[in-house]
Image (cartoon, helix red, strand yellow):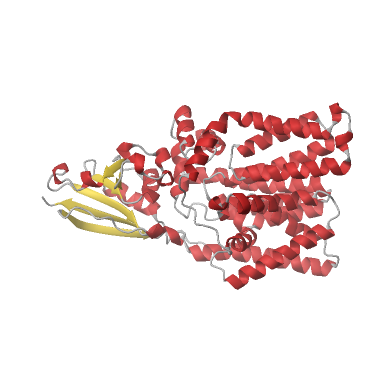
Length: 499
């Protein structure tokens, strides 16, 4: 029967992640994923090094695209798959940790309906691959500690290395696993065993394997760290950063009042303490460390790169601990009410997130906020082969390139040459030929009378319409609302050169 219930939970996880999956247009970060897989394998490596993330996700996506193509559904479909596999791996982890099928199913359910986890299954990025690897590596660690098998320790080392190659915040998650493993080895006294069966030695060998496999990436890592240190776009932390993140990883909501953030933070701390006090198994510390270590390391050492979405990996343990806390409530009726209330709140905020986005009414095929997807289709129907296409912001340049089917290569308006553009504008996948410098754009000798120039621009991210030469006459302009709200409106303006 447990297999049937697990199937239902996985089916629910799939449905929630599939819903409206392509209703929101591809955006700037996803465009990197779509662009990287177009390069040859060698150039792909070189350009990934020029960015600020490890390479594994892009290589897996490249292999995926050989089978499923590079449509938006395909790109996000891989995120859906790993999002569902995360739920399955979470079930296996809790089952292994606490030997309780009921608790494992409840934890899987909470992972399946968590709005934060669902949100990042909507992106063609490395997040759900990372969440899967966190749950898988945690499971493999517990299995290795239990079995003492060299083969299981080998598998754990491989899973840890894969996590290292997926996202830098996963290093903090593997650190938390290592701390738990040291505690477990000390607790059960297995560090006193003969060398051949010594769990401390096995842990060291698994860690050494993961480190050895990571050696080829150390030079790019140092290069990327220097790049981030030279300037990054992430806003500074304030006293509401952690409470805001806690709210999001539990309910996924945004725009919540500070009073709600305080209440949610206090309740989360109460649940965490209750979970630790009521749970007798030592494996509870794997879950607690998995949540707390990434926060502690980031807040104390890496405040400059504190970003909510980077805690999507640590948030998995929060869902598991909430399930564990509610499962230990001694009164059955109260336990059922609390579980149903939590499920209801999670589903409410899932539905509310789509209400806020308002991309389409339930059951409607009409997308009310098609953004760049509509702009790209509009351009494809109207741009002539001799026309020119300029894009006003780097934050929509690669997005437009993804949707561009005109046969005309777009160019990004820039006041600086490539070497002077900050890396977070997308220089890793940019060349000098991608740019139209202001001097060239305003050079009247570059145009003939009646030339057609198309300008794609946005109000998103605080953007505005770029200045254009005075001899360009606007002949038409269309706009489409994009989602989420920070992406603003996407405009397409057509100009005719008058002289």
